Amino acid sequence: MMARQAGISFTFSMGIAAMLLLVTACRQEPVEPLPSDLMPAHLAAVPIPADNPLTPAKVDLGRRLFYDKRLSSQGTVSCASCHRQDLSFSDAPNQVSRGVNNALGQRNAPSLINVAYRPHYFWDGRAATLEDQAMAAFLSSVEMDADTMAVSALLRSGVYRDAWRAAFSDTAVSMRRAMMAIASFERTIVSANSRYDQYVLGNKAALSEQERRGMNLFFSSRSMCGACHGGQDFTNDQFQNIGLFNHYFDRGRYNVTKNMADDGLFKTPSLRNVALTPPYMASGDSDKGPLTTLEQVVEHYNDGGTPFSNKDRRVKKLGLSKAEVADLVAFMKALTDSSVLTRREWSAP
Image (cartoon, helix red, strand yellow):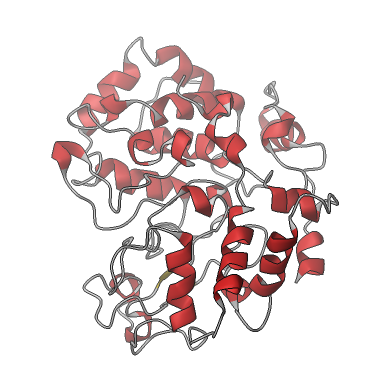
């Protein structure tokens, strides 16, 4: 596993600048490159949809929209309200988030770190693209509950007119284009400067002895952590049930597929910056109560979870000692890249 992980030395050719030139070459438009250090060279190239090429002007517009509460019906909620940079673009420590009119959502707001790499969005995977995810939150009655006519007027006003023209080369405002801009900004939120990354890149002193023990246990057949939390972002991007409840009022993936084999299944989250984003799991909860610490999460797996018909067969009693639990927690804390909390490129304009 470590050899494979260390082999994730994909490059961006000449970085994001080259990618931007490539996706816009057919229009022969000059492109000002994004800062090259935004895109870690040892990660795979960020997937960019053909119908929404990444440009600095679009990213800049998306950043402004991401932080603008005026996009919500009451002018009280923005994307950043539930995805705060100082909380690793999550809503920690809230179990669920509040939208307009103080409405409560149903699920825990996940971090947006490296969200560009995900093949589907929301805990049940009902959105296929970041643009679709942004639109769903934009229109949701318990999130932004947007008044599209009011938002259109805002985007046509002097507040956004120049930025819109720079991003789209015309003044044809649409909600879809607004979501394309927000998604473009979110695709730049790429991070891989944790001490674990430094270790993989050759700095063997980056991890302590305890963290290395935790890493070896994490990727071992004994714990099976790496079976679901592998790859560059510590997720297999699949749907599993891990035995949080013996009955699921929120049926997860089943709500999308209507397939009983998907009952109670939820998307495996990335573990990047996991130490900064409690509580854990789709609802932040379990039969035994909220999971607010990584120690509680590891103990949940160590106990084998709660019996459920669709529980993943790999979730079973592990027999880990207290020292081994501590080792695993130490390793997961080493996945933290705290630089994302203050990166000016991602902060409110």
